Each structure stands twice: as structure tokens, then as C-alpha cells.
Amino acid sequence: MNSLALSLVSLAFFSATLEAQLPAGPLFEVKSPDFAPGGPIPKRFSCDGPGHSPGLRIDGVPRVAKSLVLIMDDPDAPTGTFTHWLMWNLPPDLREIVTASAPREAIQGKNSAGKAGYFPPCPPSGEHRYYFRLYALDIPIQLASGATRDALEKAMKGHVQKEAQIMGRYAREAEKSR
Image 1: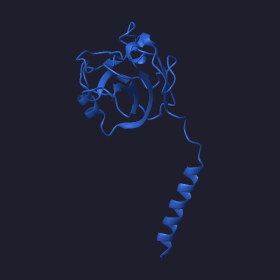
Image 2: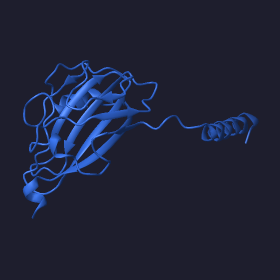
Image 3: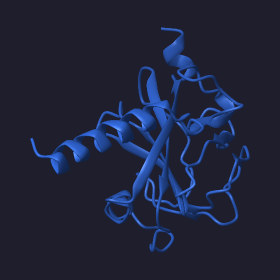
Image 4: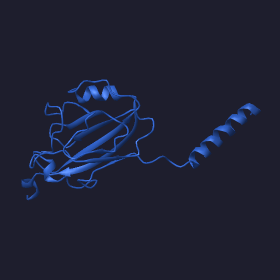
């Protein structure tokens, strides 16, 4: 091996070792003050209650983020994944989505019920899982209000820097007693 190749290998090893020793940045995460991860979503956030959106808290947004996207869905729906909520162009310095509201800056897309905004959990049978996925993007999204999930995912492609999620569960009262 010539000296240039040996120097390059040594430099690569030194860089990898140094990078492994650097402290990791803060963990990108989304939590809810309204339900525990993997726990039950309270009735007030469902079709059996007023149907308010739960609050979310955001930590550790990467510095490279120019915007955030929120997608809430139910992969257990009988006809395939049901999209409950789409929001984009959330500011990267956002730390909380207040219960029963959407941030003023948010642009909301069309859920699987055909309307823009939050659609509460309302499973036809059994207990379903509801994922709130938060994406940190290196660009703002150029879509109008009411855009579909497909359009949003196409616009996000290649721009997701990090992803965080929380999952809650919901079963209708009649289902819980069976």
C-alpha cells in the first residue's frame, strides 16, 4: 500500500473514531401530555367524545430542519391505513401543539374522511393503533391547504432529516366491554 492510500485509510479511521466519541445531539421526539406512549387515547379525543385533537410536545428538532410535518394515521383500519391528520410547514422551533388546536402557521391536508383537519379515532371494531409521526424536513413544503397524503409524501421525498413518533390506542366503549 502506498503512503497516500495508507494516509487516507488512517484519516478515515480517525474521523470515524472521533465521530463515535462526540456526544449525540438531543433525541428528536414527540410526546403527549394527554396519553402515554402505547397507552389508551382518552375518549375526549375520539368520536365518542368531543373529538378534540390531543396535545403534542416536541423535543430535539435537528438544527437543519426548515419545517416540520405531522401525519396521524391508523394502520388497523379495515380498508387499509386511514389518515386522520396532515399538517405541514410547522416551524422548526415549535415545541408544542396545544390540545384541541392546530398551530396558526400550519397548513392542513385532507384526511381519509375527505376533510382538512383532525379526524378523531373512531374504529368500527376492536382496538386500533394511532400513530402521530413527526418529520423534520430540510425544506418548507410547497402545497396548498387540502392537499392529499400522496401529494405531501411526494413533496417530502428526499427531504426528511429525522422522524419521531408516538402511538396511542383506542377502542370504542362497546368494544371494550366485549
